[in-house]
Amino acid sequence: MSAEASTQDGNGRVSRVIRIGTRKSQLARIQTDSVAEKLRELYPDVHLEIVGMSTTGDKILDTALSKIGEKSLFTKELENALERNEVDLVVHSLKDLPTTLPPGFTIGAVLKRENPHDAVVLHPKHAGKTLDTLPDKSVVGTSSLRRAAQLKKRFPHLEFRDIRGNLNTRLKKLDEKDDFAAIILATAGLRRMGWESRVSQILGPDDCMYAVGQGALAVEVRARDHDILEMVSVLHDPDTVLRCIAERAFMRHLEGGCSVPVAVHTEVRDSQLYLTGAVYSLDGSESLKETMQTSIEQDNQVEEEVDEKVQRVGVTATNVSRVAQDAAEKLGIDLAKLLLSKGAREILTVARQLNDAR
Image (cartoon, rainbow, N blue to C red; front, side, top):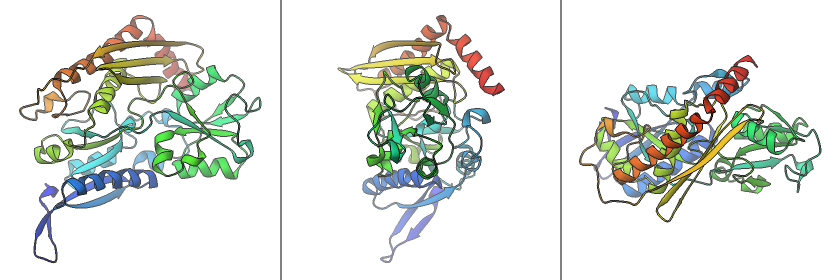
């Protein structure tokens, strides 16, 4: 296991080397650096090395993600490195991680969530406007079926078109050409890049609910590396863990993915976890949306030992109440069952077929 590598400092002290895998994009590096910084503060004797890699999703830039149909576009190469012991942990945006991980891997930490909502970034010539006040037939760029479905219904005077590339590329396409009046991006990414000044409008749940796991960072590890798992587990934010378990359980039970429009909104208030989930047709004309809640009173039970089977939708959180995690997972499944009983499968099947035919 590569975690056993060690280095000697100038005083002859031996420190353990932990290798962290990340995508090479600027945002991915910023996110990984923020996790590494937290680990350095907690474990000053550990030497961290960051290993950048390109993923399939980074290389295919001319096709909408929903058309590629691969669940692990931004994660597979990183997981391969983890499997080969070339790295010891990998930092992801949680929304890029499929709800079922390959055998032998687990999410060992889900960090405190940044603002999960979507943001509107306007072309400079439309400064001061909102989606409501943009001229008729203005073109808005988004690579997400989920965003497009909700916004088409809510803002019928606008047109929506695919836009691919990392954050830098998309902002460049917006600013340097006249193809788009605005683009929709995750607020979290813009904030982490220090580009908050470009946010013209943050879309609340009435305009656009967010993607499962959006705004949260996840640390993926080998499930059997108990020492690494224990090391990263202190990064878990309990409320974020419970919200994301509920969201991921909802998505998994619906069999959703980026090729169908599924959206969520979660909140923790007074020891209650609230989950709103929705499915949409591609044009937003058909939708189903429901809210359920459950109690997540924290008990004091802590897992005695790490067991691969104790994962909940890929997450191992030994320091978060088991009872609360079970309640969160059940909430997601129950809400999915409710939507399925009202016809969600039919809406999603048609959406998937239409997307494949595009």
